[in-house]
Image (cartoon, rainbow, N blue to C red; front, side, top):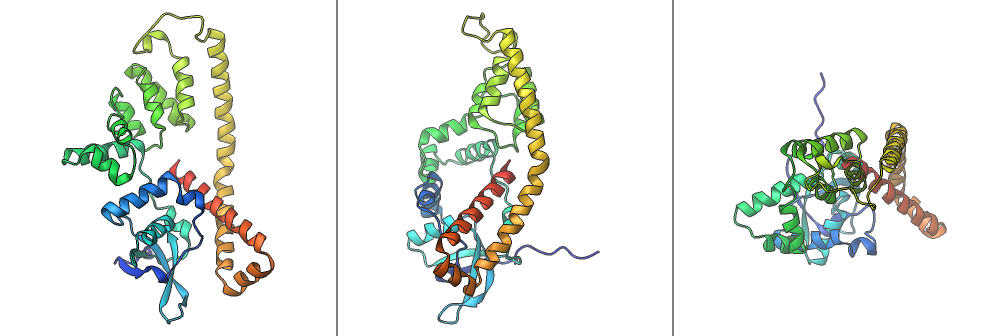
Length: 302
């Protein structure tokens, strides 16, 4: 049996920023996004928690120093530059394909984030301090802290590794525990964890399964409306399954193609040709590669 190849070297190394070569340039929208603002504040307060992922390049800089291709951490790199840092802690990858690395990242789910916030607060860190570190409003931290209030433990267990919209939990609180469990099971079966789906289930819920049962008013859905919504949900589920059956193969083709184009664009001669004769095409290719990377990461989160 052959040994498993390690994805990274075992030691984290410090590399000068000038020797790190990004594979794309962060856009203005990205640099003004809440995500980047949060990364900037976090690095300012705590430093880099997750090292950058790089791979040795075949080229060197003007001084003969080795260069490294950045596989993951473009926003962290930009934040370090803006904060005046000169070096970054990096993981040395044994593969030069960024998607291989990104496939191994487990994004925090809302329930995991909730538990981390509770644990941090239990250690004496105030919600205000957490909000300052993440550069978010303290009300958002308070909302995350109360995320599971009124949620059945069985539902928490079922959804703990799912990327569920926070507003879904607000809807679940309006149901009794048994209906919460049924709703969670339906969402997992349909692989749909949106607030709209939860609201549709809420509308179709019998009054005796609601926390605050009330008499039916003229503004509420009739039996015919509920039956129609159930048919639409069933049709939506079948349509989703049809798309899901081909999504994996389509994304695989796109990612392989993106990796091939990325390697081509790292060739100095090819890059110079595009820059001189086909600048618009080069821009479009870069945008398409960024879109494929973003879609692949979203698929992994889901």
